[in-house]
Length: 272
Ligand code: FES
Image (tube, rainbow, N blue to C red; front, top):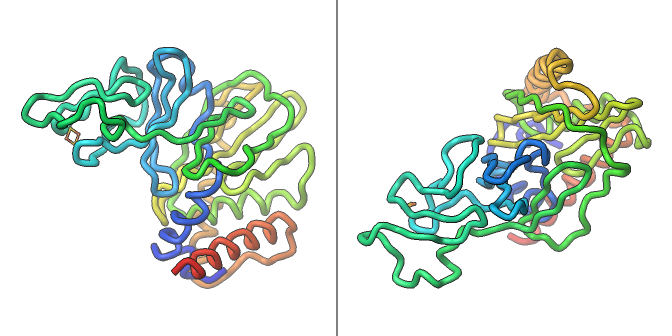
């Protein structure tokens, strides 16, 4: 990896076309959208999405882009609603993304066309987490035994590239084991007795990353101090990478992470 891969936007565009367009990406814990109408909007790897539990109780991940003029339909980061109403010109959609209505001056010519519904992504629910995929053709993630009861989520915004956050989590663990699972590209699961912590990395932009720490088997509040420490460590590591100091490759998980990134960059180079 080169210093620019951590500090400039070009690598992020390549990653959007490769890493974030082919693999299963975590979007939230099921517990964050527990009831019908609960939604959570996020930008994951450059994709604007909204995860929602629809009127039938089905979990869906929709593209957060109105079919009228491609603006975000959902402006709030989370909440509860009965329908989605685009704030720009008033197109409305049900919770499954189906077009409902629009004011006559801006109504689509064919309200029955599938092109007026919000685009939806393939969804899989594993270990109490919700994943989506743009491609949807690869095997779903495997995270082992069911997790204990959901205890909440801590959101931490970090001024770093998403790869720095991944590297920090991997540097804390040397090898794969039953107690630590690394799920390429954006998830780490750590178990300790009756406790399980899922670290979900949300790459908003190339220098803005959100860490969602999902706590199972305990209350989330107990774990806020350690999220603060991760933020400090990642921002320190980001400065190192920007200055040209790369991670030493004596960690099997880190080697595997860089190997997969190299493969993604090579794939992008072949495609252009
Ligand atoms: S962009 Fe949504 S209604 Fe116009």
